[in-house]
Image (cartoon, rainbow, N blue to C red):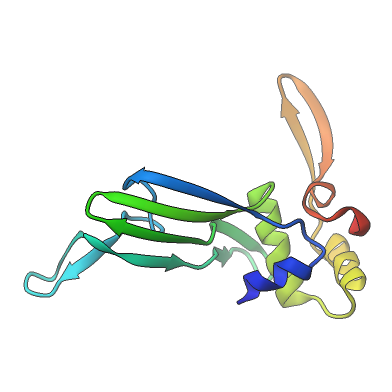
Length: 147
């Protein structure tokens, strides 16, 4: 349900990325599967749905959020799959900042974003093609009026 809060949040709206084809999208680590009750082993799911929530963990302390996988819904029909993945800009920074915003801030939207920027900074030095630049990922993941 927290995903619905994204709609009216200071964060840019993620896009839905659709996949149609052979089963290739994990849910999250393995292809869709079920347990065979007779042999107590896993076998590929033939028909069914899977709903996967945002995957995350904390590393060094309670607010050191680490993104693992994006939310998704998957439907398999024999060897075919339809999947809808919630795709956010700058995935790791987006989801980690979103978790901090949801769980560790209070106040108005603007106050909460200022708290995020102060306590959960996203300032990095990025090198591409031999060129080094400084990037504040909040500039890439927030709606314009909250930058």
